[in-house]
Length: 212
Ligand SMILES: C[S@@+](CC[C@H](N)C(=O)[O-])C[C@H]1O[C@@H](n2cnc3c(N)ncnc32)[C@H](O)[C@@H]1O
Image: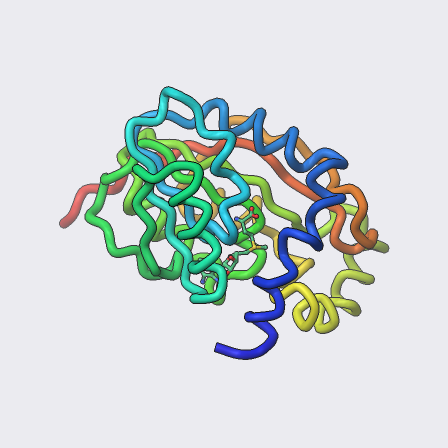
């Protein structure tokens, strides 16, 4: 675990404070109001979603692989939602049985996982058939000029924000067996233009093919 990840965790809440106020928090609140039953959040970071889970949630499990983030998450869970289970895991290797959850949540995570298709397959596997993935993700622009800038600036983005700014995440969600039920194409505010394109919505895990 490098200094960059430690610095990222240390400064994350401060870096995001203006972005949260400029719309991200409102989006978290609106989407997470629909989370219910057995809920898994991946890449929980410092626990920014915790205040927005409602009374419809029967159990909440949050996974996070990076120790510096994990420590902050555990502190926040102890203070705000002590019944939450916190697990150290990558989204690509979720330590849960098939069909364990009703809802999975990924906010600003699919941009940074090492293997996005594998992470989505894992989310699909641990969701029950018909379970829902709630996502808020910054993505590749549909506008070719901006997408080209995202490609040029991606190495810088990787260095500063530990993620890619040019992933076709909605296509990947569909490719890994989810049906997108609703999606809003919007933007992150108070960030550089190449990180702005944002998708927020819900996708349903299609039934798993029978084992042969
Ligand atoms: C930009 S932060 C988002 C944190 C939080 N979800 C939020 O909405 O504020 C990305 C998070 O994903 C975590 N992460 C990185 N690689 C991951 C992986 N392979 N699987 C799951 N989470 C990962 C990072 O440690 C970090 O906590």
